[in-house]
Image 1 (cartoon, rainbow, N blue to C red):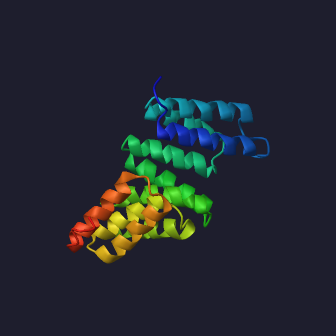
Image 2 (spheres, one colour):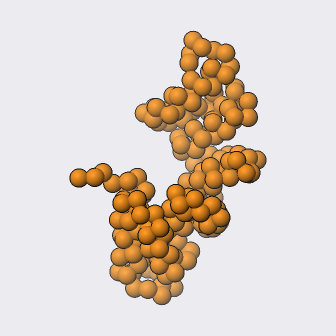
Image 3 (cartoon, rainbow, N blue to C red):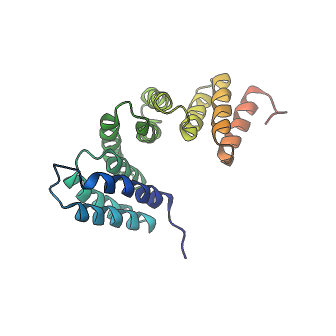
Length: 192
């Protein structure tokens, strides 16, 4: 049996949120069961690497629930995989707007940050810093922030951020690899 893709797992986790909100929504143009059917279909398509199919299913979900930030984040993620940069940016931006200062804004902020890293490095860094401010315990955001600081030559700040990401979640090897690269850049080969 083929393991489920992480994007599909995120979509499956989001299903619980959508289910909880489906019965209480007043502005639905589609019955809650129909919305859930498309949400499930999006997760299934993503688990089979059918990003375009997942986007089409999420389009249907968002037609019924245009202000569903989790669906916007997921569609942005699928558009990112399809290299549809403007659509991904628009989806992440709208999700961030809808989440406001809620800690759930951290994920689309980090994704938009990575999307903008080459073309808008200052905006990218601002997004990472905002992601950390709304969710200080988001280890992935701290890892990406450490990488951005390291690329800018801010090795002391990068090392501190890398250490924070490892303290929050010591398992990912990438966090340790980033720390080694930063230590190498500072000339501290003993710790790398």
